[in-house]
View 1: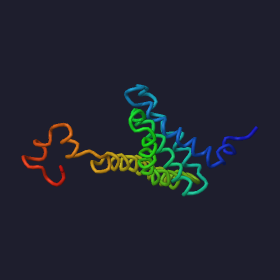
View 2 (view 1 turned 120 degrees about the horizontal axis):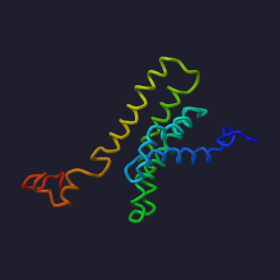
View 3 (view 1 turned 180 degrees about the vertical axis):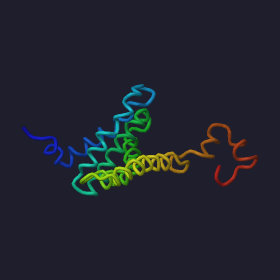
Length: 166
């Protein structure tokens, strides 16, 4: 019988596994309401990136996992954006590539107390940095111009429209 490592040797299968592992944390969000899943949802993605043969492959696993996470998070956009939902998921998923590399760098190889302590600090911080960039007004397309579309432009932008508000 072949092992799981042999099955993951194929780049296509490994990428698909990373995308599926990246989609797992979405199950802990309010709609599925599996809150207890939040404690273990990242484990498959972490293990996959940790066991990557190279740092480049770990970054690619991070990107594929980020793609799966973004696609699962934004599944509701599919009826309106069609194929562009996949483009958005791929672009935003690229933000998780450095996180995948960090996982391999800090958790791969022989374990040590110093690397484990660094991983406890750096990996959650790296995830939060990705979420900060992802939710930044410019990258998410929100801000003063979206306020104008909702009819709040005069309150937010003042009486005269500025260059930012159009």
